[in-house]
Image 1 (tube, rainbow, N blue to C red):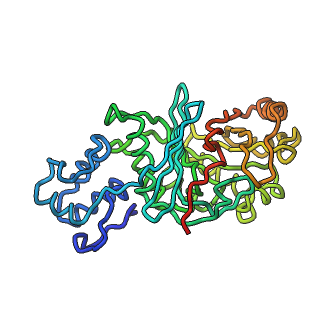
Image 2 (cartoon, rainbow, N blue to C red; image 1 turned 45 degrees about the vertical axis):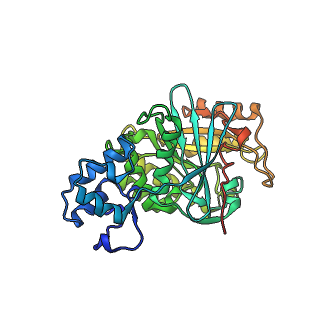
Image 3 (cartoon, rainbow, N blue to C red; image 1 turned 180 degrees about the vertical axis):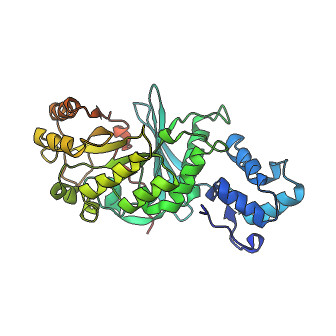
Length: 361
């Protein structure tokens, strides 16, 4: 399956193609179309991602004639960082400006044992989850593969200004703006670049895709690019989840959990992470915790309890520390690995559910 479009007459196109839109397979096809050997893809990828060179003229292991041809048809275009904010806890948020005037947000979360980048996949979001700032923006468009992988490329550049080529990011989570599985092709292309040793070389367990539960796409992902899977659950019954996550009306909890079982069945060490936002008086009772234990009893699962981060106009409040601890203890007693996620970047609106970016209409 091709991961990016390859045109039959590449040098005749008016709009220059973007190298960042291509994973290794697609780039090999690109060079074969130019009647060049496929190993040219390896050379260009190493220049782009290992040496961080985006000047075709400087890629000296390509012939001068090929470099001149590529300059006419290809580019290395990335979003522009227009704003950077740093939280008191070390979290950093970048606002990236796209060529059409839209803006997306990317978050870097440093911890003792890992350094995680939270990457966006869409401008806005169409799912309209009740508690989420991104959903309140509405939906503008999907990001290209270049705009997705570009967030990682640019974040590494910002974090390593004094050490070009160094790697500071150990984990990537597709948990930023948008529903990744609604932008399937571009997201998979970008994740393949994250995994490829010729680009970022991350392991599958260090790349996580978070979804609200698009069941057919979960099954497809298991075949195409089986990275770590996280599911935004947030409720233990369909009636409540219908209100919080409207997508549940199409793919109810039982259908979603069946897809999760199929996903982990492929990997004996695999597990699904379930994200559960703690909303005071809504989904945080001991009874609901017990119901959640029943739902997850036969699934290799980890549960992340997320204290709600305030989003103006939603009407929700975060559960108390006591309520969260009681909920967590029910799950732990049932043998379900459960952690309470730290609130990171709240002072710069970089916490879970707070990403808004800018939509140009």
